[in-house]
Image (cartoon, rainbow, N blue to C red):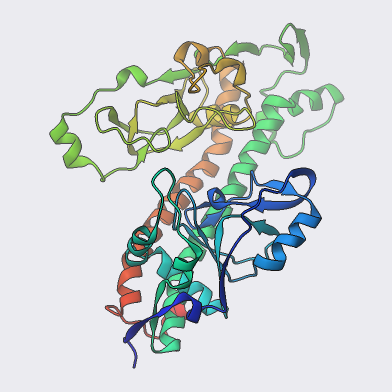
Length: 419
């Protein structure tokens, strides 16, 4: 009957329940990707820093724990219980990751959403072991109770509704990646490769740039100590183009902070939620790591692009552009910077204000900075709109999730989202 629910063990719901290898194959320069629990985050699999293993090791691991499309992965060590639905054909091997091999696409979607529910997450915490580092045993995953609907069509419809919301969120994410790539390409053309200047030197019209903007650029390059730069430009430092709001941190009283917490997004160093040192800001800003999460593996700074009212702790610099440089221009510049020479701290990386201000910056005349801001503003406006929409959709999904899974809210099979 529709609406009725029951629990069955994962070993019965799935074709099988396994885990990845417990060995540590040697990394190689050219090979296949190898992922662990730390690559599972917020329902996604981040392969950007997965190291490579040999084809031989890859095949050996996949004899026991091959991942297929619509399987569900779950982190087993460290941050336990992070699920991930594999929606594309995978090409990686796993270590210390639980593997629910599902029987169908619909089962995979249902299982993924159930594992995200508060009920499942609470049960996972109860099944976890370890004092120094949390882990969940494979046996516990096999016996894990999975809530299922007695009516398969209802179960399929629920997964379709939740999946449609996630699909739109993923679509926004991909669209934003494209929009940012367009902005970065324009930044590279104007401020790194100096394409408009070089085009003038060659007597041609640069592609993709309107004549009005081209007219703002000089027709010559100069050799300076800092390198070859357009005539009239200045090789300066970040301190000349940033407004630092760190000193404007005026903490609210404890009562005000508690009353308003949760109303606005929270930003700052990863895993830091110190109620004493967080502050409320407003407007478009770039947050740059001050200590803790400061530098990425490739040497670029840890950054966040934020807007509206937001909380931030005292582990991040709060920046805006000035002197003809927009905040988005600042963001694009910093994303291409190597800041390793400016970071210190033996135990914990730190980027103090003095060192941050010394980071090099190529300063164009104000009219060029303004033209660039005008060119990229629609791109970032759409990025902000997409993110706001995704937040709304995520809130709706998370509100519907427990009600749909439990049967408190019914799904009509001819809803548009279920088609």
